[in-house]
Amino acid sequence: MPPNPTVRLALRGVRDALALPAWVVGLSMFAVGSLAGEVGFPAGAAALSTLLIWAGPAQVIFFGGLAAGSALPAIALAVTLSSIRLLPMTLSILPLLRHRAKGPLLQLLAAHYVAVTVWVESARRLPAMPAAHRLPYYLGFANACLCVCVVTTFAGHSLVGALPPPLAAGLLFLTPLFFTLSLAAGARTLPDWTAILLGFSLAPLFTALVGKDFDLLATGLVGGSAAYAAGRLGRRS
Amino acid sequence: MSLADPLWPYLLVLLIGFLPSEIWRALAVVLVKGLDERSEILVWVRAVATTLVAGVVAKLLFAPTGALAAAPLVGRLGALAAGVVVFFALRRSVLAGVLAGEAALVAMVWWAAR
Image 1: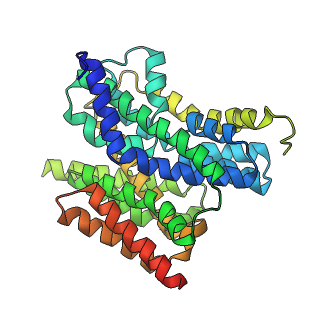
Image 2 (image 1 turned 90 degrees about the vertical axis):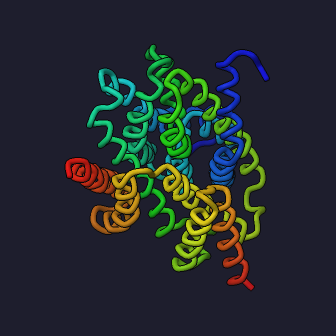
Image 3 (image 1 turned 45 degrees about the vertical axis):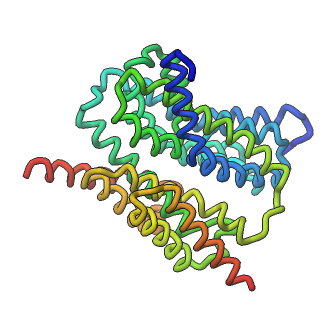
């Protein structure tokens, strides 16, 4: 066991990531790597997209758009719309890390790791930890996820189309299944459960109402505000 | 798109992939200044973010891409329900829930393709 407490905390983050979450997000990046391979993108650029974009839906839109021959500004716009969700996620994580992530550069670095997997796991693990322990744990956890994902992006790129259909379906099912259970594991209060149920039921409704570019944004704002209001009413009574 | 120049794909990742998504994380770093960890607005932001993630799940389940579309909607929802039931039955074990849900889905697609 290393004597330095910071290193020990970071290693605990690495261990918790490798226990399951890193492999789940890693397999979803395997699918992204396959998609990049089908589009004819070089493996190095596919791995770079995982390292820099680090948001599955944005990467799918990016490679899908290139495959469809969409105009580059249109792809950039679609990517930015799909990534708006990173704003509230990052906003809710950074205050938890502030005790040690003080400078703007360190905050930008910490913010870069925010993606759905890292967010759901951090949102439920960090608040229970002492403030000074959070940043090293978070960086260990997030870097382990990112490293696994860069490797699986490469693997997906070279094994494109090699999976039998049932396993390919299981691979794509992993992300929604893991996010659901991870949200359920982190839900403690009534507003948490309200937010989960509203998000799940409003998203298909808003897809029909406002189209697939703005449906998530509308779902988040309407459902999230309703869940927040439900929480306030519950606290008052 | 010209993939002839070997640097072009890397430039594309940087300009129309990285920048349009990273801008929101950078904006959060700017906006978070002066926000208290216990402030009401962060309670609301957390509710919005939770709802968004649940919305992402719903979109992946109701409008799947590629190979997942081989499983019917009822089957996708059923496999998710199996995962959730096992998760709660085995004292909130995420790993057990993931394994149960995956087994249900893969078995179903394999069975349907026979």
